[in-house]
Image: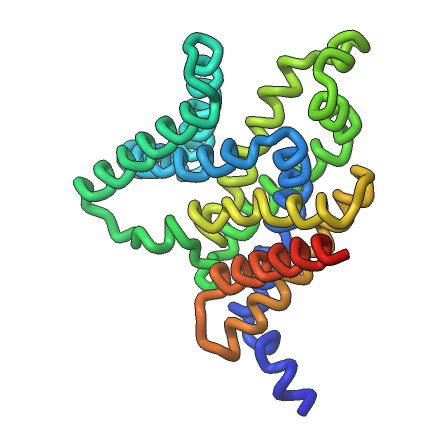
Length: 269
């Protein structure tokens, strides 16, 4: 019985999938709290979609995918901010147009190049097929994002709740603003190989949204989001092994179910 239960973790590729996704999920859970508090959930969606043309262009000029993805994500975030400040259109509308346009550009570019890269692996990840080098790239980027958030979470908190007060206290609001955008881009790049572009959106939104319903303190919210992400990753990968499904969508499905159950429970309570 115990041997059967431990069967998934007896394979090296499953062990690497568990470890890689946990490494990615923790900093993305921390980020998701600030995105939810700031109302930036669509920003995570936009950057996740916008990295595709950067990945394709990096492949064309023989650069690491991470470089192209990060550049494309930052371009999307900065250009959306510029357009929002210089037009009457609201930011959510501009983000919708910007990320759909860049995603369309990425699909067009991808369709016109010769490559052995499978589009499904870019969109939905390939955590079971990660190489050792890809794992370490993911781990370094994720550690960088997690370290910055851990050191500066109080500054990000004040900036999320009251930017004017943050400015009055001498905090560099512009640096915090673009620093958070850069962290989102780095987190998406880190998740690119494991969960892919599309499913990274769930990791950037769901843990923070659920933790927001559970708690009214930021510290508790951060810890709850991280714990939920860890349990969802372990449960999703483990379940996917037994039902023969892709791990990343299974993890996202668990997060979605937990969100709806939480909403219903809180509403009844």
